[in-house]
Length: 346
Ligand SMILES: Cc1cc2nc3c(=O)[nH]c(=O)nc-3n(C[C@H](O)[C@H](O)[C@H](O)COP(=O)(O)O)c2cc1C
Image 1 (cartoon, rainbow, N blue to C red):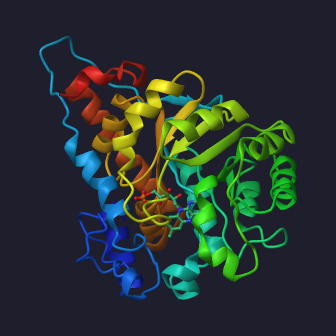
Image 2: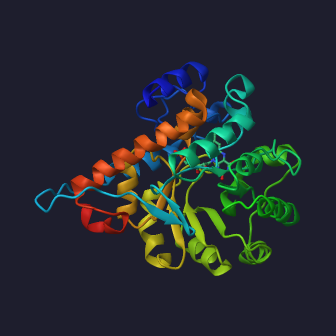
């Protein structure tokens, strides 16, 4: 099996939901778009899809500087995240909710979680797991997969009511997960409220309370401006994810790579900075790391890999992105991830 074959399989299974296009950019002409006319969100972006599209546009604007007259080098993509060694700075995003993209006929929630967590682990990286209305303290698909991987995974919890989040955190501690976190932009989820599991905006004090309730490193996901980045650092976040939820929670935001430089300027060195949204290739990874991100998450492509090839499909995708990153590092003169800097951009 190859990444291409996994994608072909996924295209069949996701018929009518996702076109598995060469360019996945949330353009209004894409199969996944059209929510503004009452369609389900599926794998698309909210409203017009502008936030989803802006993620991809922001990456396209960035140009890599090819530089080859220098001593030969074989790039090493290894890095660490929250003290854990990973073979490359690319991780599986916290994507959930198979009901929104075809349900059990496509893949079960349990299998999606297993594929991402175990597939990432096999590739030498980490799978994040998310949270949606079908999850509860009893139905803990993501945590179950992380437990199966001996704790090798990260649980991102929706900004639910504080006590519920704390109970999820306790469960994550029990299975020795690498870290926990909250997707603060998940307060934009209408589906949680519809199912009587409302999500809330969180204050710095709310985050502090959650962070002080655990010894696990805490991640704040869904940062799109310097004020929120500073608040997350003030609360004690060990990492932040610059993210607009793949353009799924608010229409007309900028792309994540557009807002990254300002955020880097204020919090670099104070917390670990991840980014997601539109990352599809190793070139994209190199671009945002050159802007100062410490690593990336991949969402939609990981879903397609899981649907088409299960855990093995996710492993194949991750290794493929790693090899492209390696190639890009060689062509821009970066021997290690520490060598990736703004100088490799025009
Ligand atoms: C179908 C789908 C479900 C998602 N579910 C969650 C979730 O439960 N929790 C979360 O933090 N983010 C969720 N996200 C957002 C992703 O974690 C990530 O931010 C986004 O997918 C990155 O953009 P990309 O898909 O273009 O790579 C979801 C995204 C998609 C496409």
